[in-house]
Image 1 (cartoon, rainbow, N blue to C red):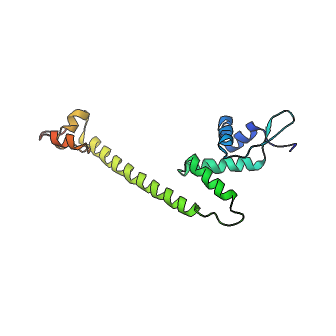
Image 2: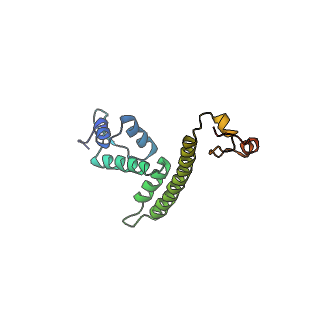
Image 3: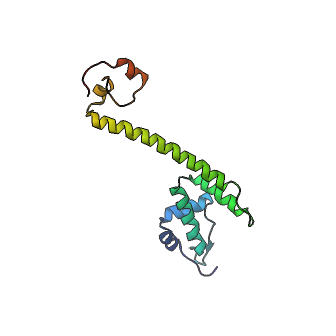
Length: 148
């Protein structure tokens, strides 16, 4: 390959830094580039696409290991649909739904604490009307009295 894009050009076009580009290359997420006569890395346009795919998959919640598995499966599909992509996306969706449920619970408890005027964690934990779900130990130590 006598022409190609240098590391900085690829990184800029994909919206990553050069260290990320090299890290993905070391991890096998990005094919090793050709080298110029001077030893500079020369990438094809497909490197930009590959980087964008990795970053998009990360934004969807996939780990780099999961991304690597998906990319590897795609390399071996030979024109056939990739078995497992649907299942992996469905599993990731279930993880996201579980996180949303947890965050909703946390938000509800924090909203209740703000609405109750809780200002001191220790005082609130020992109050019978504390809206924050503390451990069973906190339940045993609660006393009836004014809220936070």
